Figure 1 (cartoon, helix red, strand yellow):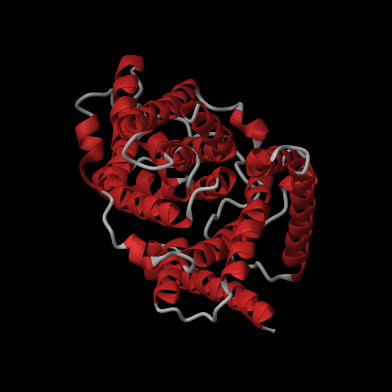
Figure 2 (cartoon, rainbow, N blue to C red):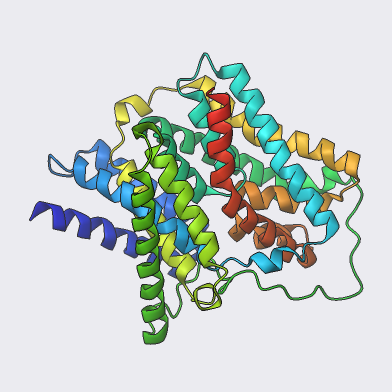
Length: 382
């Protein structure tokens, strides 16, 4: 009886968080994932759950990410990516290169001071090219310790908040001194369909009969994809099992997005993000708070170098390639923070023309982050 009730608690608590964030703007500014982390840490540190809960928490964490990945990918538009402007494409490439360079430098500095530094490097590649869902997927694929993961995620949030503060305040003014200014077009930008539903944070209409049934169908497809991933996983050696399943479901999720009937399903992205919230609460409530309170400066510096080192490399490359300041900022934001932050930053820059480019780049990062993260981790780990 204890197991079903515990699963129900995580599912309902996460649903309540998503509902409250969707309803109250002040909660949404913090974000459902961060709320889930905070609540999970409180639950774990106060030992509010009965003994033996670890197996349920671990099972939920293992299931939610493989289900979430295809749901997040179903609504992506491969064909639309071919319409990227030359400047945006160059800026996207420099963003990928800058993150890889910065994370590699951090790894070379701290590989003997930070345990499992190659795995952490893989997670940082994933989160700073695609966003938080990639970080969760790579945590699973690379077998990162729960406490190390929570610490890395905490430092990521701190550095991310500092980065966002700079971008929203003085970033544009500073970069305009080093990079060309953005040249606004006389024509309105062409509409580009990015996802079936570009309201990333909105669950409005989720429970309408037609929408709900089609979203459940998307969940069924995701279950089939995960089943195929489990089948592939059984064919490889023990060390490569989680890498195999993450790469398989990522590839199949992208492949499914090319099928119009699947690509047009509304709210599949939101359902995937809900599962990420469930994962966040489950994994945070497993953390050992006694280990988390010890400051690990080397890990914090590793994350700091990944964030701000990649920004410096990107600015240098943008100057060499003569990429304007606004495009540099929006593509960097799209990768470090993921697409939902693009309109916020574009509004601060007073430039709506870059929204489409920023969101598209962020979605490409979602798609490629897992591949890059696993590849870099394996290369650095020898």
